[in-house]
Length: 159
Image 1 (cartoon, helix red, strand yellow):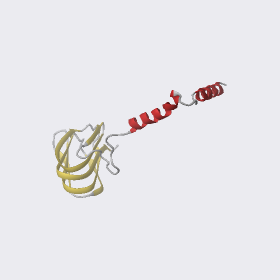
Image 2: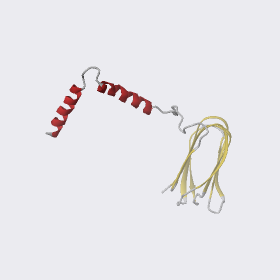
Image 3: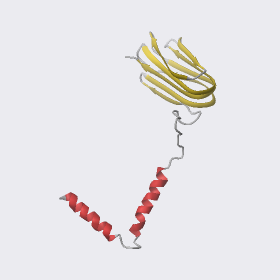
Image 4: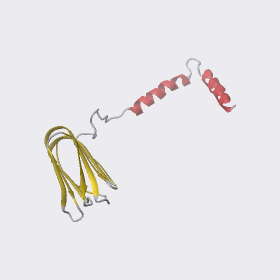
């Protein structure tokens, strides 16, 4: 059988290099050292930090889906994102944790640039959801003013 031939060959190889002061004795130590060096990460995200590094927003903008995440500290921004939706019924879900200061403003506009949905946040929101019906989201605007907290905004089509 091939398996037993391979096993016996492997055993012969290992027995051959069990002799003291042989250079193959250093291979396991070298392998572990290389594994340790290359498995370390420089930027480790701490537990509970769902949005990565502080003041670095994350956006995922796919067909019929938009997600925005940020872990902010005194962060101000004005973001305008084109949406890629094709349904006239959408759901927005918002979570704001560990709010310390500032305000978040959300605005969604249709293809005629009419503001069709607005929402502002200035305190913790464990989970807020709303259905937007009768228009196709075309532009998503998110504005923060001296905002500190962990924010998640998700916009999805409702089929």
